Each structure stands twice: as structure tokens, then as C-alpha cells.
Length: 409
Image (cartoon, rainbow, N blue to C red; front, side, top):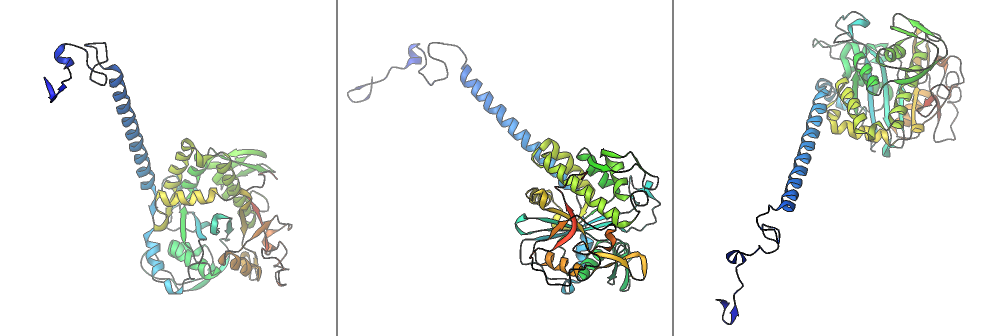
């Protein structure tokens, strides 16, 4: 039999009872044996596919869970939109200004132990975080809660409106929540707030626990019943409840001033940033997930930061900033002329700081040489003593610290 004229046909091995040709369903020379190698390769490929799909499924589940933890504040965005014409213009660079608000609300699980829930809240801590273009630096400016400022007319939770008034800064949060606080800060600084985050007592504690505590150093022992804090002197690691007491305590540590309390908060946040970066938390999924879980549960953000992708991008930007360029300072201020228990800005030092941030220009911080930081100006001198003279440096120096400073220095 031939395939074509003059060409003998190939024999049919199967028909002849011979072994299957190489590449067939059976191995050469092993009639009747199962194709083990081929089956092994097929099962391996199937196993790998299952693992990849399972990993992708778990990853997607984690992503959805973390993304769903975040609370979005649309009310503030809607209120701010009504006042768009009076707000500072958006910056021309990729720099970002984020307002971080620590709420002293007693509502919610874990917050009632700090006082009665009267249905109101004030901003216990407010920090303006400026992340420069190109992530070259991050500057966190504390705004004293007792700073006397002009608070604009704001919409209250019941729909009524307050009148514009000159009052202490943290009343803005009580009057009209986040939107009122943002408008007050923008009016005070001329800096447009791009995003905001609000965190309460319980959220702060969970964040600290997620990184397994933060190290601090105390010169003297502390026993403060109001802050639920009792600590020995010396170097130690603080966890949730202790950490919260440490940043809230006022009367029992140092001179009892809010100025010193803000300095302590800055020290603690610097140590927190340093630990997150030095421990490789952002690069280790096992360490990163608990931090992300705590962070996403703890915060309320604007719609521009309410997704895990947005927060990850922000965390990645912060990770790229060298710790010596992560700076903390308090806006230049002194005791208010008419009430020693309130603060007022030191001019022109405060305006100089706001201008540097507004124009995304460098700011340098250095330790204070004053015994009472409440009197310090932008250059660490009383009432901004050298701020009146034209500065030859493009980067003015303000009293503050960097995250790279040793915790017990």
C-alpha cells in the first residue's frame, strides 16, 4: 500500500502490535505503562494554577477588606464645595497638604472611659502635614488648640449656622466638624488643604499596637490619673493605652503647658515614623497588613484618600522621604495678650512659615534654645526676634525636631 504513487506507506505500529512512537500516549519500550512524566507535568501545572488563583483570591479578599474599613467623609467635601470661591487656589506643583485631626470624641467603643459623651467633640490635636513635590521632605506643623483665630460662619450638625467669631481654634471642630476646621486653617494660613484624616482615641491606640509599640524616654516617673498613665522614668516602649496617655497628659509631665504636650506629641510621632521605616514594616507584608488594618479602621478621610490604593500611594511617598527630612514643629506662637491661657501667632515668623509651605519652599528645623517654647518665634527667639530682618537664606529655620533624632537625646 502506498501514500502516493511509488512511495511505500509507513507501517501502522499500533496495528502491528508494536510500541507507540515517541511522543505518543505511552513511553517507548513500555507497553501498557501509564504516561507518568506527562501526568506529573500536568498535575504540577494544575497545582501551580490553583495556588496562583488562591493567592490572587486571598489578596483580593484582603484588599476588599482593607478598602472597606475606610470611612469616607462626604459631608465635609459637600460643605467645602459651597465655599470654593473663597478658598486658597490649588498649588501649581505636586506638593500636598493634608490636615490630620485627632478627635477627642467620647462616643464609640473604647472612648467613653475618657469622659462623658456630651454629643460634641473638639480637635484634641491638629497637624498640618506638607509633603513637598518629589517627596523631598515632609513637614508637620502643630496648630495649638488654644490658638486664638477667626472661625468663619459654619454649618452645625443640626443644620443651623454659627456666626463668624474670634475664638480658640479647637472650637471650629465642635461648631462644624472637619469642614469648619479646614476653612479656619485655610483662612489662617492661606494654604489650601488637599486632603484630611480624622482619628479618635481608639484608632490611635490600635495604630500603636499594630507596630508593636513605640519607644520613648522619660526623665521623671509619671502618675497621671486623668490621662490613665503611670510610668517609671527611663527608656521604655509604650503600647496602646500608655501611648495615648503619654500624648494626652498635660498637668503631670514637665511644666503642664499645652506647648510641652505638643512637643511630646511631635517626639512620639517622630519615633513612630522612625520605627515604621527602620523595621521595614512597609516592605514586609506580614508586618504591613496589621498596620494597614488598624490604620484603615482608625481613620475617616475625604473622598480623595478613601481607598487602599490612595493610602498606599501616600505611604509610599512618605517612605521615600529620608527620616532627617521628616520634620515636626509648632507654629510660632506666644501667650495671648488678653489671656495667658490662650495663644496668639508670633508675627512675622508665622506668616513666613506659611509662605514657605504655600510656595513649597524649604523649611529647616532646629532644637529650641528657649526654656519656654510658648514664647518662641520662628527662629527659636522670643516673638520672632530675627524675623523682622530680611533673611539671606532661602530656607529659614524654625524651632522643631526631625524623625531622625534619637528618642532620648
